[in-house]
Image (cartoon, rainbow, N blue to C red; front, side, top):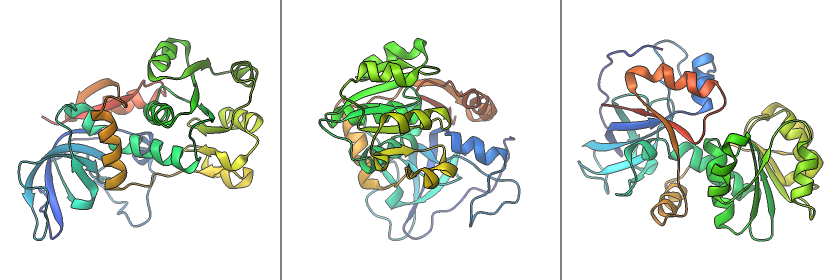
Length: 289
């Protein structure tokens, strides 16, 4: 990874240009760094990465209404946000809440929308007992809180050093590893009705033992096995409406995001190293001076 000088993009019709203040980093970004190429995206170098961002609108394209120059916004931009400037359609941004820090706003969109999509697709709500694997991570943190907002009982897997954190989110913590199925059954003798796998492998296997209805098991990691096993492969269904609902919950104090690290753009490689450990609590943010 290198910090390069590139031409500043210009906003076209229906677009705005945003001077980025902060951006988030996802496991997906690390996959792109390792060589993942998406259909329709130029695989040549240099390649930008990063999907969620927050900043200040500094240029408005023709026909773009609702976000004048100076507006503080957050949103998403596929493989573009780890930069000083990003150009996006106005359908991909919402107003940044005044009480939300730049670091939280920059790291908010991708994980929050993935988690909300998962809870929605798994039909989690009042009366459910919902198992969330990797519950202290970026997606897991939000999935726990959204399910609690909707009235579910949540059990979250994490290392013991994150158990108090999960309790603070409203989840019942459980240690992952050997014996997980038995520990979950002891916590939920009435059974588990839905599960979200953010790890793959053994976590997905445990979910299959614990949840009777495979249509209520989702994975955001083990896509290769999802079809074979009859569980949901969950991708993010992004929309400004979904993002606005989530930011409203943040403003109301129902949803919080912990930033475990915030590093400047020139040290983005350090953010990737942190993500590669697989032990990040909450989110890592990249700050753009």
